[in-house]
Length: 285
Ligand SMILES: NC(=O)c1ccc[n+]([C@@H]2O[C@H](COP(=O)([O-])OP(=O)(O)OC[C@H]3O[C@@H](n4cnc5c(N)ncnc54)[C@H](O)[C@@H]3O)[C@@H](O)[C@H]2O)c1
Image (cartoon, rainbow, N blue to C red):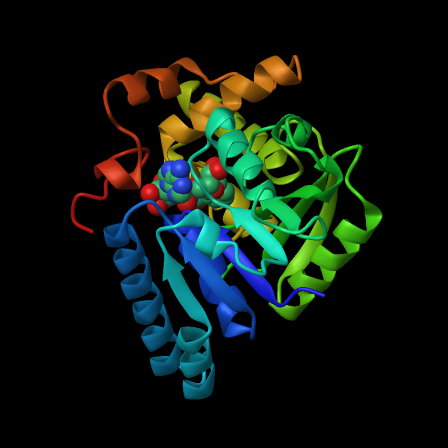
């Protein structure tokens, strides 16, 4: 049974995973290399909770419980004390994820489950150097974690059924909807999302319609909450281009190849919301 959760990496995703887990009663240890990063994470979590309370989405009891259940650490060994579930949310580099997960295997019991929040790496590749690869699976959360309902669980050939079931049960307790996906390039979410995004950019490039109208086609015609071009702006054109290049090679499918327009915009530093300009202008926001 999962009681104690260690989250590694207190960035965008790690802090969100720590927040929701603590909010729903788990004892959470959040680890990062620097105290400053942990302080930033705790401040962001407090702000989220305050907003939640102000909007009536979170109760004061939940807020207090969340903060009482959270501890921060700069020592990985200490953060792994009595750990039942370890989730890594460090940058998307295979070698870094290997280093951390192998070190963690030395701190935790063999029943401890290991989750990786990778959005694109093969789960089998992440599991490859582990002594107990059967305990690892992909726990792919979405940003912002406290709002997005989806938890994409990705198993590799050797993932134990009991591990999948434990994580499905954990997902339910933190009020996420779990989907179960076999380890395949782009899983379910990135493969579909990036295909749509790349096609929308090609349509813009060909002058089929304006960015606003391409987005409206999907929002009003298909009830998507956000259009594919605006979503690409939010994720970052550079990030999506990287995933698209990887998927076009891994799936041998040109539909994922970044269009010329995207390459040009990335070269010009038009990366989307984070740089103030992408398919839309954010200089005022
Ligand atoms: N940002 C997103 O929208 C998103 C969505 C889904 C999945 N992901 C995936 O989640 C993972 C993390 O992404 P992010 O956006 O939170 O990154 P981020 O850059 O915001 O955070 C990464 C954190 O890891 C820390 N870190 C770096 N090296 C470390 C180490 N050796 N030990 C402990 N901490 C270390 C950094 O200090 C930082 O706090 C990546 O695999 C990414 O692909 C991101």
